[in-house]
Image (tube, rainbow, N blue to C red; front, side, top):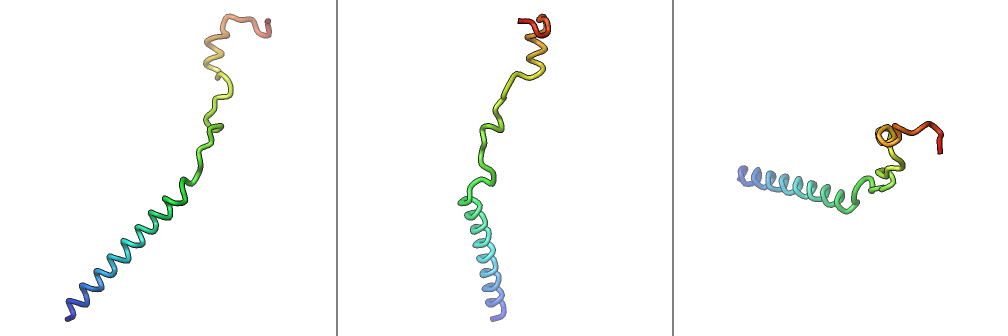
Length: 64
């Protein structure tokens, strides 16, 4: 009888743990990403210094 109650306790404990893991997974899945994608964070606003060095090498400064 004691082995049966121990088996039941272990089974219930494993079931509770699996329900807790599933609830955590579903909660994080339903909430969506923590930080949404902002394309302006990845937008290159102007050519960088390497581009200027390559393309403006021969020009006189301030000349039009």
